[in-house]
Every structure is written in C-alpha cells, then in structure tokens.
Image 1 (cartoon, one colour):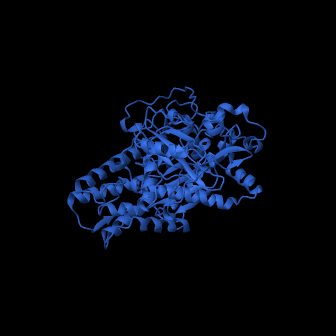
Image 2 (spheres, rainbow, N blue to C red):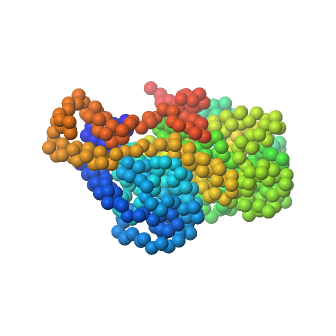
Image 3 (spheres, rainbow, N blue to C red):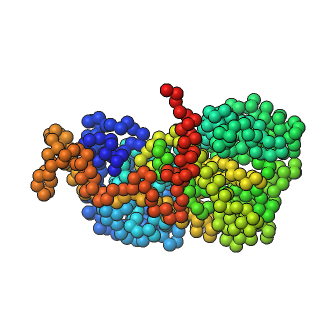
Length: 558
C-alpha cells in the first residue's frame, strides 16, 4: 500500500519495480486505463463464466505447461473442450469445475516443465482459497500470483503493487557463478583482503589476511576463466610448492551458466584445464566434513521477499545430498563423479551402487541420494557435533551472500523468489558457499522430495500471502479517478453515500485502497506467518551486525 501511495497522488497505479517514483500525467492515465479495461473484461467474463470448466486430466489446455510467458496477452485461440488426456498431469488431477469467484485468490503457473506446474498446482489446490485462473479467456494478468520456471515474460509496469511474481529481475547477480564471485571479491577487496588469496597449506581454507575480509570470504578460492587465467596459473603453481601438498592441489571447473552438475570436472593437472565457454575455476575442498566416510553438501531453500531493503527467510528443512562412493582424493579417483559430485541428477544414475552403510540408505527416508536436514542433524549430534552452531553458520552464510549481491538487484514490490543455496562444511565445521541456484529443482522423484518440497511451497505461499482484492471495486475506483483526471476536479469527491471531504490526497488514496483490498497487506519488517521458515532479515541480530559492518565498509567520505 505504501509503495502504491508513494508513486502518485492520483490513484492505485501499477508498480514497475525499479521505475522512478513519480509517474507523468500521461503515464498515470495510461496505467489507470489499462487497469480499468483489464478488470472490466475480467468482471464481464467471470460473470458469464457458468460453463463447466474442464481441467485436470481432461483439458489439454490446462495451465500454461509448455510456455513461460503469460500467453493470454496475445490470446486469439478458441477454447478447446475436447476431452483429451493430458499426460503432464498427475492421475489425481484437479477438480472438474471452476470453484472460484471474482474475489478468489487466483494463480497461474507458466512453465514448460510439467513437474513445476504439478507441484505448485497440487499445493495451491489444497490450500483454500486458491483457484487456478482459467486460460484462453483473455484474462491476461488478472491473477494474484504468477509462478514460472524461467524469468517470466510479463510487463511489470502493468501489474498492481500487490500482485506477486516468483522471480526478481536482475537476480543473476546472485545466481550466475561468475557475477556472484565478483560481488564477494569486491567486499573482500574493500576491506583490504582478496578472494584470490592463497590457502593454508594442506587445506582448502584461505589464509587470514584481514579479520574484516574474512567476514565476507564466503567461498573457496575462485577464478573466472579466461579473464583471470594468469592469476589462476599463479595460484595453481603455488599449490605445487612446499609447504603445500601437490596431491591436494585439486580444482573444480564449472561452466558459469549451467546447473545440475553438467559440464563439471575435477582436475589436478593445469594442462587438463580447457574450456569452450566462460567457466569458474574453484579450489576443490580436499578436507570436507564426511559422514561415515561419504561426502555430502546441503540444499538450503532461501526465500527473499524484498531487495533494497533486504527481507529474507530460510526454510528449516532441506536436503543433505550424498555421493554414492566413499570420499577419496587418490589420483585414480579424481575423475570419478560418483565420489566428488553430490548432485542428485548425477548420483541417481548410480542408485543401485549405494552401500548399506551410506547415510542415504541408512536413513530409511526413501530420498534416493538425499536425506533430510533433521536426520543429518541427528546423526551429527550423535557424534558430538554442535548442530545448532552448524545451522547458525549456514544461516549467516546465506544472509551474507544475499547482502553482497543486494546492491545489484533493485527493489521490486511485485517480486519474491525461492533460491536454492548449495553449502558444504569443511572438517573444521566452517560453512562454505558452493553456488546459488535460481529455480531449484521441483521434481518429486522420491517420497522425501514430496514431503520437503511440498511443505516448502505451501509455507512460501502462506508467508508471501498475496492479498485478495475486489476487482469490482478496482474498476469503480479507476472509473471515478479517470473522470476526475479529465475534469481536473478538486479533492471534494462524491460517493454512494453522498459527499465526503478528504483532508489530503493520501487520505483519499487510503480510502480507495481500503475498498479494493479490505485490509492493509503486511509491510516490510512486519513478522509474517513463518510456518517452517526462519527469518534472516531484517530485525535479526546477525543481520544488524553484518549490516553495520557493510555500511562501515562502503561509507562515503564527507
């Protein structure tokens, strides 16, 4: 509400995220007219929408599986009511009748990935009062929530400030390996350190150059190739000299734009470093924390509801992902991905080779190569490890990672996003960032996937909580305000009850918004319904500590 109020003194306008604060008279009129037209169409269509809306297993046009764009923006195709089976839907399907109203919480899922459409739809259909917005009726962006796999092809300037989309524009500053490395290095260099500094002999732990720099040293020594090839050669050569152990001079090569373990290799010979595209070359951790001799890393879900200012939450449950073969850095094991890469998309091809002593087998959770965080904490606690401290270090790592990239991601009131953080511990119990994933995998390949991912989606929706809004009231407000703009009327406004005086434009705007929204949506910093989430920022001790350190680093001289 405050976002809408601050943009203009003339009405409930659209929100373009990083657009300038004040709209011109022409822009405001165009925005107002768009909203009036869109929701007039919506109200007329939905009033007439008494035909059975066949979805689920019988309508091949359900949702927007096969597209990441809001296809109704160019909708000129007739409805197809042919009862053809859609193989992309689960057998349970959706209800065969539209159960919504003009005041319902309406969602749309645009994606070419059936597993994404299925999990989001399944969760929301079981969470009243969510209803899927019918497709093929020209209803365009009249939803409350849009969920897409890739970046949505939607014009944010045509959205109302309270509508929600599950992606931030410019979030690649966080999810591109090369860009994130640059942001982390900027923080380290600012306080006199560098992310390129040498490691402690015999470990993957950076040598301390500055306690302030160490605060922001979040990932192992990293280079972007080919740009930093000379620096990489120096670092590799240093790893071959005493007191370092050449057998531990291992590096992992990752294409900057790929995920799910594609294109990754571990090398111990600089002559093996080759690339046909830009890659990140990172010091391989030769001293990871092991469980029963197996390497593992963590998949942590982090929800961001605002950048600049930062508002973020971490899901308490997640996955520990295990290798199928015991850890070894012997030369003959260097090229064995089943030893060194924990990605589920890789390990699932070796599922028949998981030994009975592998934690993924011992857990009994039926998670494939994964176990739940709760089971991991239990196993580590049984070994005398302080798991509360480990979790705090994970939370601090995720929070600082968001903070180093925050300046490159503008405020976008319509956006929220769930990121997949990959984290690993060394044998000194320090948490290190591997990478941050946009659109973490939503496939439900195991029972554990169903339990954790469905709970995460459910609690994400409860926390984000897109508000209901009265689309009839919105049309009436827009009609009245457009007439006022044309006639250049004063603040003295007539309503259904006669004449009403407003002491300010802000008071009148709040009155209009109360008619549309009913109640004021949650504001930044106000504690939401957390469910399985834990708040990282704002108003948390760690955040305030890191924020003071960051602000002091980048304080401009008078």
